[in-house]
Length: 268
Image 1 (cartoon, rainbow, N blue to C red):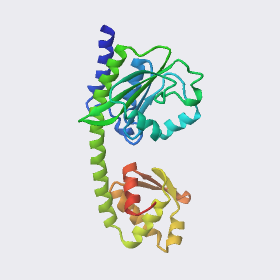
Image 2: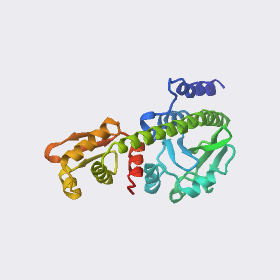
Image 3: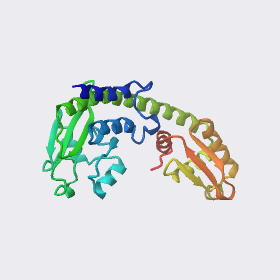
């Protein structure tokens, strides 16, 4: 009992952070990474947190059980639809699932290697809604009642933070849409053409453009491009820096702003 209490206190330390345990710098990546790494260390198990749509919110692997296919899945931060759908049917913690089950998180291709692999799934609910799942994987040692207490306690506190994350994402999306709308309304027709061409070339948050090529392609002056970029900088949508002969460096401030810009400009 003392050991379980100590491990609960370790988890609760995450809650005592001033702004909770969501990693705001990684909101579009793995916002619960810190919490999941702590939980994986406490339980001594591979730990994965997904939302109800299978989006990966955080993971930590104590043992290397995955093949190239699953590693790519983790890099893409998305669990398969079929697996997620089956996991969502679980309404209460289901422990020590064997590798023969479709609910096992061990790769199908390597289950003959990890014959003692065990999977435990703990659903995450908040405000009466299914928000996601915690998935744990171990070799040899079964998950005992102490492990399950920790898993369910973690699911409860994570559920609250997932709700908070959803509200925060909605707030940020609303702010981004407003900022983008106002910024685009300030552009002239030629400046809008320039920005549309620029964002059609942007894949990630950072890119480099050739203003001369855009100027020639659209029949506009370089000053139009410069003015358009300055207006978006003033709206805190992007940052730009001249690289001389190498072109102009552009960094969009967030994925949300980038997506809003492409939506408003109707860029596919």
